[in-house]
Length: 186
Length: 378
Image 1 (cartoon, one colour):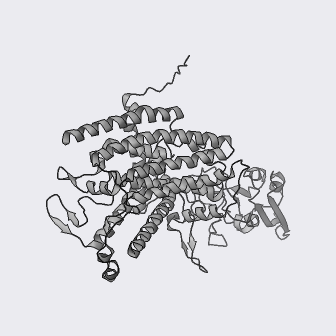
Image 2: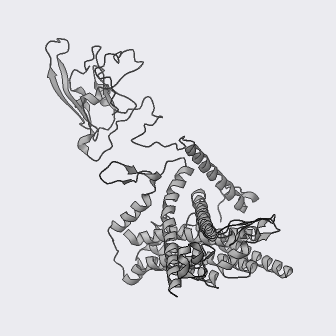
Image 3: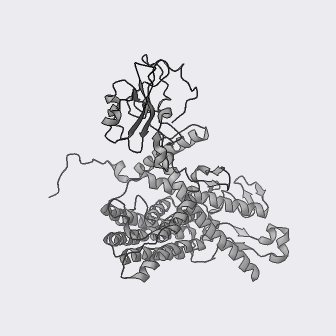
């Protein structure tokens, strides 16, 4: 017995002739093609996709866990106190910190001399941000830009992590005091 | 005699260059056109770099075809344990060579008189003139049909000798599909033959260079619109491309009859598919779209329906005809690629029913109607 489905497509004569529907479909695809070609001829971008390393996608969510940044104090120094909480909690063991001591600043004697994240291992879980007691590490929505042929080139060092320029964040008012005016696009 | 040899060697070189060049171009067109149709960017990474500099020629990814060819030539030629080594090695050639041969009977330009092309050539060639066609045959369409029939053997041999169930299923599907659609295609072409009164493709183009009712160019698309549809459908089915790609559907059979082929053997199947687009486009242009002629263009120049004549010199006419044919074939190929990226695939029973219950009766009706009109006109 042939089973009758509740959502059996009901084709009219026009659909069953197939030819008219084929022409309609070709008109749709051809229209998209010609529209995109016209955009290209007039130097606009028709494609919805992005050139991957060259172009940054505009539609990342503001809450996207992208690359890490190290925040700074008001005097421009790094906020991190080198407590190693993030490196401890990191499930991928992607964070390595080498501490330095500065006893002239009795409130914050420890600071990271080197702070490196291995993006070939990082899983972008955000645990380091949650573990940090000092709000020293955050994740911004832009993704780290490390396409390459070599794992060793996929480390982000302290300088790269500290080039974050917060705008409109009342807690972090330091763009004017930044030591390097040129922003390095990671 | 030596002049004939020189001219025909040139024709052969042009024909092979035409097919391979356009086929390589179509691999790029297929990627890029589908990408643009789907709001994507498409292949754009391949480049040629000037040696010792950082100057790169990307050319919208045009070099991807060359990269593909190089990749296929350099890949490992992995062969399965098969019981029929001869057939296994023969099949790609049997699939690719007949497709190349079909183009021999397609005229890619009007009449060429090399002596009138350049004054320096006149002492050598004299007043000889050649139809721009590799093989001047009266049985043009029959040659086309028979060679495309040989192409089926290649796919069948490939599937049978690969020693793989997927290949075998693909080959069985390919064979039944191609033979079914060959029937509809043949019937559609016979009605065309009845219209033009000739089997020779060159004579067909000359027939189409006239006018209908004094205004419309007498192209096959106006005299035989139904045959055009039938031929196009059957040709795409012969070509085994979407919406008729049952023999090599990735979702069911890994890649059908050439599952077990690697490197350039697989490349030959791919290349033959793209050459087939070129050849089918060339046939379509020749039989239905006025061939190498623009509307109202003859070997002497433009003869407009108002009666005014615009004479063109011989080199100009030859260049115009060759360029016209190239552009027409390119556009027809782009149209076939657009069909491939627009339509969903048939189910297998739908495919067979469509071929035998719809296309073939329609072709037969078209043939009878054409014959009736011919009889009434004479």
